[in-house]
Image 1: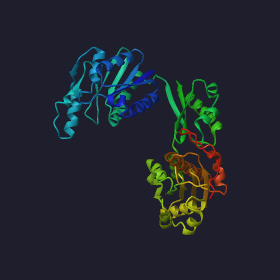
Image 2: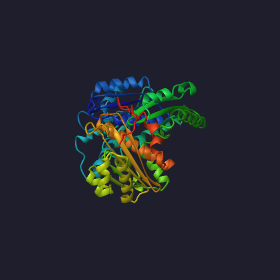
Image 3: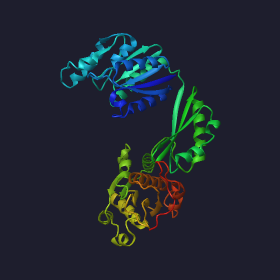
Length: 447
């Protein structure tokens, strides 16, 4: 069954506000078995909104509209819907109750301006808004069921879950098939190489669509399934995932679309292990990624941005002799940093980074793109050195942080061994062509 999404509002049309609502709605509808064929955006224009709604009604079964339900003069979605239906706006008692409840919770009277939100197209049904003052509404035009929701993301999401999806399930009786999207996260391989390695997928798996999404520094392989039988879908899904795996190992990070930070966190939790991080060139990025994951307090112990050599000495116990003789960007320095972080954080693992992010600061021996990663465990301390090819500071910082997390993931899985650097080097040999023009040489960074 086909569905479309319509966003209204000049702020969205002009790009002043990013339309994250459409992405969320599309995922929800696809998960329910609908095929979302179009996303559209129009400004705050009654005639245009009405015209687009009529067009949508002629080609689709379901449409979700967001935006334009506020109290101000430029909130005109309800008026546009009324014009599309050929009816008037009328005061709707259920809609007015939503507005009054919102203001009553705040101990304030309903303003004259907000009473506008109680006006819905004649014959439309009210959709409760549990979080805001703008009631949504639903109506049928032709063979299309429209759901009009506020543009405030938290309100829209609550109404999708509590009003829209239950109504759709009741109307379809769950007979629209099963649709599923499977994401496979890869790291260290360019998008073009992934595409080349997966040539022949469509021939091997007719009816399953394959797509690639670059989310620097990761590439996500997305598989789109549509079946009427759940068991058949499960079998085909596993076969397809196995086929992809065989062609892009060892670059697979997650079969569930999880990020490097999420996968590291999952492995740490599985071991009841903990992590302490000492960062120089990555400037706290690794710690930020780790703590972006809900539940990271279960395993994250310490994050230290020891940018200056004096901080490396005072906080982590890196020896002055090491820094004087080898410099901050060296295997020995990051080994001492990682050991110091592990000790100070009383953690199972210590992870450290030091490098030259650029665009300046490089030298003949340690050019921009040089990175050293140190990892300390109960088994001992190891280090790896790589040289990446970008000359853009942000791109290098992101690549450095991702490379360090990926190396930690390998150590958690396989243990700390003498060939640590070589084990990861094939993965990093092509790192990274994911950001425009960003390549890697695969060479080591000399001390």
